[in-house]
Length: 290
Image (cartoon, rainbow, N blue to C red; front, top):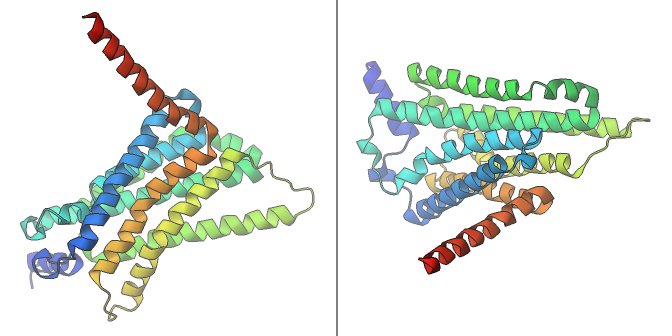
């Protein structure tokens, strides 16, 4: 079998043929709606943080870049296009790069989450170290984007379609391990004498955001674990679509967490409604004058 046939086989087995095995619209449509709602939530967070200087803290700038990465990830999600597009129309080489880019962006999301988690720990338990590292946080953010660019180039030359589950499993496993290690170190620090952490409301929020991210990804993690370690077990494709839906809801949960736990974000969010009302009144007045 030549390389083209191999690639076609990988495409058909990794990404099911929508003509024969297309998941039901009862699953695809709600998942697509959830993805669009998540995109709106991401854009709201990006806009609010970018617009208000007082919100541009180190933590929020990590969140800003995380959500920029996430909104691109969501826009490229194949599930969205499954409702209106047959995959038989997609060339195998295009699908290879498309799906590879989705995995790269997924990895980018997790890298930003890890950076946010490490920043939370250092600020609360190793303040002197965090001050030195935070002086270069913009460089760190640039390096994360650079890693994604390098990976994007890599997937153009290597077919990772058959490895997508392994990539997803590995990325989530690493993130979970770092989260667990941070929790263990946190517990040890809190039990040590003369060790007190001044955990403020905003840094504690960072831990909530990371926890939300991992909880929403956990169903997908379990699904991919089963498919990797027990490939003979038959699992419905629709179950996988539902695990994606749970992952998309993360953006909505994070928007709600920011709204209810960050007073500055909440006031900035409310100001959006007031500014739109002011603009509307101004437009009405100008019409009356004319």
